[in-house]
Length: 127
Length: 486
Image (cartoon, rainbow over all chains, first blue to last red):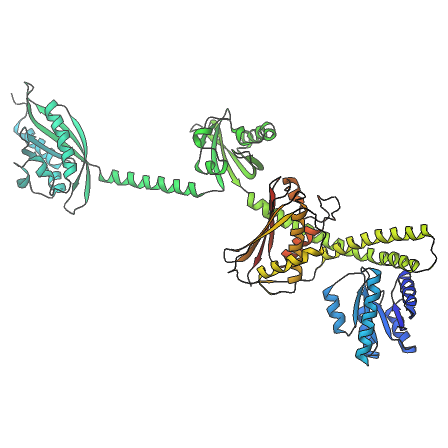
């Protein structure tokens, strides 16, 4: 797989976990804790995928998504949330151009497989 | 000696002639020799046509009233034969062909020797009286009608000893007791034992002191069923103002209470929903970290067996919490249903294959369908409605560990909505549990989360529908869902 992933979440244990899980999947992960930091990071580095939490301190996840897509429309963004399956949030995220949606309430194995699926589909689309 | 002077005789005739009563005299052969103006007026005949005529022919113009004439004649014959006075209420058609009711006094006139000389007939026109009687009878009937149509109110009166002395129409309907079963019984028969001992004396005391009292209380029907009323009690005073008893007016508020309870339930559920959503989110983050960390650790090689076992347990338990939070999120799901036009029968048919994905008890349960083919479509969210039906059918299954029958019936409810009844022959739900049935975290099952039915409730509510339950312990339970037509 070997994607370069940017993880955006305001909780350190969540960030660290994503980092470890991604490493297990042979991906590299850089972690930041806010939308502002994320925008900064994509400006400096190239990433294949951004994992973006919807609930962030400061700039909201949806706002960050919108801004990332403005700067780098081709960058794959997958939203993560603790709210579970929320149709309103999914619809809004889609409108802003996110490629997928992962709930923290899903079993870990499913989170990993969803991540792989979204990433693969999005990559193929961009080619 | 004739006691009458010529003058007084003239006066007497004038008096008779102008009297407002009908005055008629005829001899033993029945031939009329005297009549006054009122007879002329009522019969619409002239004196000349009356005098010398048989009295019956004189009074009646036609033979339509033959039966009445026969009765009149029979009574007259009695007076003639036994020389005794009689009365008779007869009808005469007047000049305008209107019926006049005449109350006749029949007086046999006897000679000094006691021989029958003739018959004096004095008639009083009582038509107006009759009409007003008819009117008041009509009013009585109307009132009776009104009372019999009032189902929510009951009026009854109790004397100072507490015995029922008047038991109005609405009362029979409300309490189920017939008048003859309850009159003179003590009013406590309409109360449950505790209220009869404590509340009832207090109510009467208030009425004695303040004239009237109003309260909400439960009354009891003949069959023992308790129901809520607003009870208004007033003093019953006689003309002198002495207290002789109490007037009770009870209004059945069962329906209103039901509605209030539903509103209360809805608000409570909404509040719990908000709380649940907030909690679920807060739990999801740490839970994700716990499960994820276990996953990462389990992926490492060369784990001690004990450690691996421990991690597996953590995993299982975390999974349990995850499922609970999932349910919480579903329960609090605020997103409105994605409405499409659905045939409810097809929706139900589509549910049955889904059941195989769930762990069903091994008991033999037959599912019978009774679907109304002519049912108009409804507007609904297929996934959400299927979730409701799966939930209800699973519940039904679980209530029949020894096996039984599930009946799914659809029908048209008053051309307004589709009605779906899901019935089982299981162990039923106690009245106490029914009250809390749709409350989140309320479960009668050992391993239930108590969220299934509250989710169903929310989904149906979001469809502008209604869900209700009827149950009898050891007989079975029926869930009734109503969904408006598209």
